[in-house]
Length: 440
Image 1 (cartoon, rainbow, N blue to C red):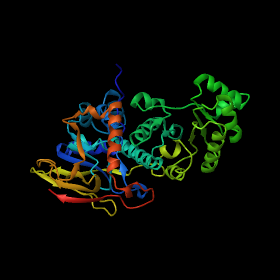
Image 2 (image 1 turned 90 degrees about the horizontal axis):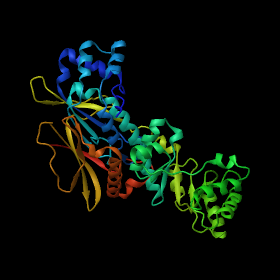
Image 3 (image 1 turned 180 degrees about the vertical axis):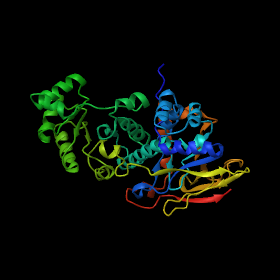
């Protein structure tokens, strides 16, 4: 089996230069606790969705410095020989705990906690943030679209609007947060996301007439296929579709026009022609607000591209990776925190809980303590939010691969049911749940 490519250089140079300096002054082996959190929710949204955890764990497995990576660092004089020797043998041997993938989060939520030596943990910063910030932004946007869509299916169609690997990650994150399928085949192969797709306008333009294009598609895929009816005149496209496929036509897709009025006209025309069971899918630059505006329209499914793949106005979740506790020179622990204006952090190792009363989440509770204390205890009326993802350097494979995606999707559906009604509104507002901090 061909080994996976190393992920070790998916990082920023300053992480390795800090490691280099730490090995020289003796601080590199101090035990440390790093924490991933967001100071605020981008776009003044009411909740965020954690996504990317399973991807991150798999990438961590491949965080190894092989000959090629070491040669690059040496040739570019990034670090010295002592540090190269350390990196040659690098294996993360610490512990990582965090919110389960698919969980909702709020400002200050300790989404991921990385415990290890400074040397082990500091060089993971960029990899951790690049995955969680991208995927959580997509999942948060997708969840809002899923809320707006209600029971109507959502297809992810944004691959052509982002980078090729980001497209695969976006499809995965969207599926976790409530989308039902993707157009991206690699997301289907790699992550088990159901795939969909029939034809673009090029198919119609290829043929001598719209009727010829529809007839060829029906011959290839049967009458349950979906015909794209807006290449030319929509009303004529509907008439041609039913004439070719009959009243058992599976679906039509609309990709242009004033969608609420066009959808109503198409539904009425289909019904008049006897195609009462033909489904209507709309696409055309949808976002959560456009989907909500179509709630009363005779639409059966949505396809979302650009807005989903770019986070619908918030392309990053804005999470940060900060040192919150470190070992003292003489033993014991010290909480540490950044105090900069508008960019501060809260020190200390944390355990997090969601208070749930009569099935409805009421607040987030974060308990601050030292890492060597007995660990998080159960709290009455609360659900513990963190789980162990890596222990002693060993990744919990439960959260990886297609099975991890399926579990994350189910977990998200469950926790979204706990949210109070006000959390599901699309308007800008304060976070739906307050976060309170307690001392152990």
